[in-house]
Length: 88
Image 1: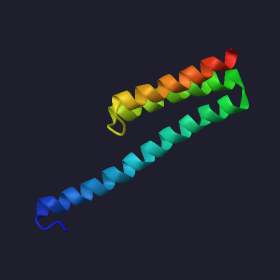
Image 2 (image 1 turned 90 degrees about the horizontal axis):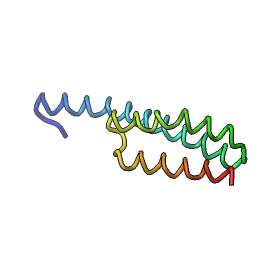
Image 3 (image 1 turned 120 degrees about the vertical axis):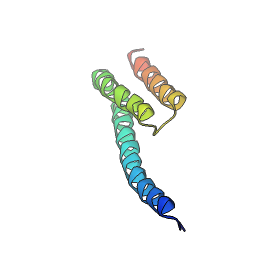
Image 4 (image 1 turned 60 degrees about the horizontal axis):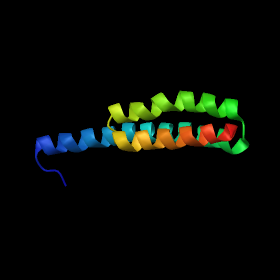
């Protein structure tokens, strides 16, 4: 348990940041899920549109420190590959 005033403040700040980061991570997952649903339905135009909207959201997670840059790039790349495979 935090004892000094600075460590108590740090604990409060961590609680608030955790809530914000949890909301951001959830939001990113929602966008990814929308792309995956469009892919599974086989609707290429919807999948392309969903990916176009999801990509900046996923990368925003990197700038906010929620995900690692390579992780976000990998997710975008794999989703783009799956969307591209729909037309084949």
